[in-house]
Image (cartoon, rainbow, N blue to C red; front, side):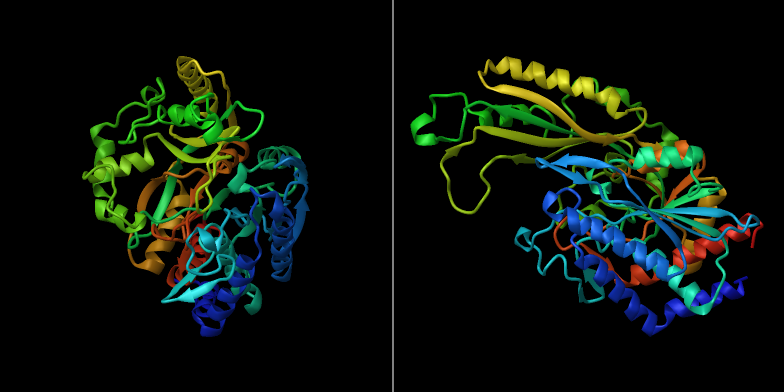
Length: 482
């Protein structure tokens, strides 16, 4: 049985005029270059936080911008983007749901291979292309859509809402853990929260909605190698000196093999193998090796076995090489020997692994491999940032409400997944607030988050908005507070 407020909400979202307004608001958000990892865009990232606060205020939300301090980035001392906190509703008879999202994005240049300007939303064939469209501005706009549909019609929400939107998720969520801990202990903004909902991940494929109950953690490193006092001419110094790049390439080749096996001793051994019951869970999922090819854009899966591929993403650790800072990478040729280079890589972690447990293993192994080179260069392993893995109880009413919402809107049951990515704040919310945390994805597996031509299907944006709103009504019904 659909409550009157719920049916009015759905009717508003279905209206063509509302759809156009929803897309226009997302376009505004995408246009703000809130790249948290680049000092050149810090002012825009902060501006995005202010823009978001104004949007919330216009929809009846009481807000505050919380100062998270400063950081040193690319040699500059910068203010961190503010956390945008909000509250709507104080009814003690209703459940209180905390919504989290992030308004910062990954770097993007059209020259990277984008078909269009990454910071101008391009709508084509039912898809919206732009940096942040699916990660995570689209889902945040989905929540604003829910608020607008109620605010415009004078409808009361079925639950109390709290909001926490940050601008540093793509750069380690600096300052947020401390804010959550402080607010959980003595603050007013998270007081009385009964559950948390995060929409910052994706379906397992392009067909079946998902509910996510686990995330891998992350430990991000740099191998810094330096030698000469300045860059050198390879014609004058080649084979005369120890070259930092040569040492770095050798070290990075020792981290992971071509089949994804992590070569650092002790890392793989931390994780117990799956039992039969766990493997059956993966067999039941609506997923295939062909889905990997569709999402990746090529048939490059490490295995032809569905279960192995799924476990590689969800329940096994991985190590990926990301890039080399200081190396020549422009078009054309430059015969330079770089004086210092930094190789970036990360480990995705699963229980019982933590950043603290892998850092000494990584550091000791790379130092031992460097010693074998007998190089006169200098090398330092640098831990940049990280977060612990997280697993939740799928039998909680929070997950039940989300399942019912998905079934009502998409007319199919969701896959229950553990996500390969990392959202460190998830575990912080679970531990500090002591409540169930749910990941309710809006986007599809082929959205290309962090990649070129990132997109969000309009159907997922609109139907996803309906799912978010319906989830709130299901929370009220399941907990007897409707």
